[in-house]
Image 1 (tube, rainbow, N blue to C red):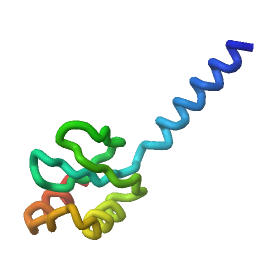
Image 2 (tube, one colour):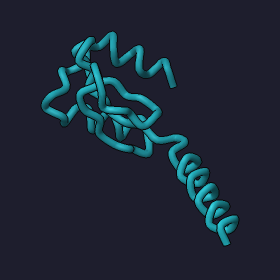
Image 3 (spheres, helix red, strand yellow):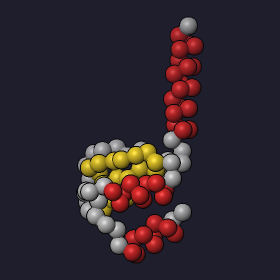
Image 4 (tube, one colour):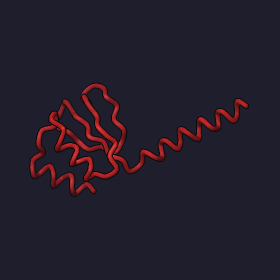
Length: 86
């Protein structure tokens, strides 16, 4: 019985990790003073002071970043850098 429970827990943990692929989060970085879009679930500690998401696409994350009051408006060169990273 313990083996079945352990196997179920491992299966659930691996399924959760697989579902996180392809998602995006908006993260406030205190050291740079910017909001960045990342592809891994952020850990809110140290310089990372907030995280919002997950979003299914990078476009959704960019739209969310533009509506968060704590995020400074990115300059045109920063948007161009974001687009080239796709």
